[in-house]
Length: 313
Image 1 (tube, rainbow, N blue to C red):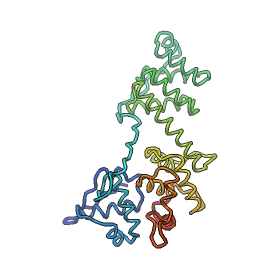
Image 2: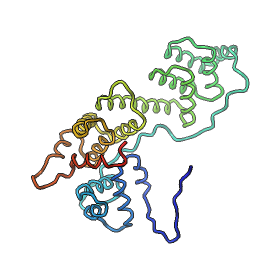
Image 3: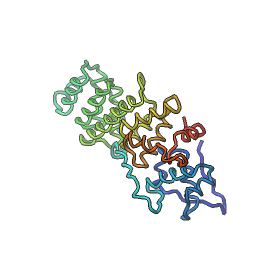
Image 4: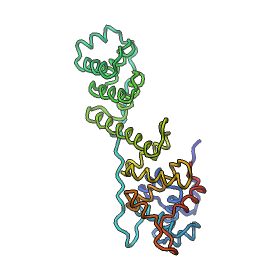
């Protein structure tokens, strides 16, 4: 099924900057509600008090939510310092798509494989590297796959060697998996050794970061699921330290008695928006400044709102 916007004659509408749409994956439901309210006012000024009255939230919370979008350059506010810089995501590869040749109609014979190994230096190098990295005896099908990827799919021997090295590093040594990865890289424009090495660097960084996040959150005996990986990757791009992630985890357990990625994510994004980088700074942020003055970031109130937030999974 496909969904479309209903455009009514005479109906009102407002624009949404592309930069705001690009933040939808990372923002919370509360942050999105505040943004939509601010955008609906066009270029008219608004205030935390107005937002709080209209949306039925606390004024301090409204200010925090508005400041989130100030930090991303979507809103501006007099007297507020330059927005917290948000690092651009590290591109995996150039988003180029290219046609991948179909397998040849005729089956590659072992005679052809042997001739190419003897006469083609590039293919001979791939076989040598594959034997060294995979440490196994190749079947006929394995040998045919190497020759097909180089001779018919058009993958450069040095790129295929890098693919094999990456697959070996994650203990995925079947040629079915190697073929799948090699074609995926090719379709995404990774056709030089420089692009292949950059792709491998990014993938290894993401994989090591996932292990770091698991240690910070005391997750053992399982991998992160896809939604958890999305949260972890956003923290990596924001350059949030493992120590701060662990501190957020401790606060989450104190308040909810369970691991909640959405709860931890809200803490980390709030701290990031305010420029908080260490557990000490985060702890100081939540200390009461007076018996009658409410703190700008109330974990108890956050917990209450998290229980009612439809975005919590």
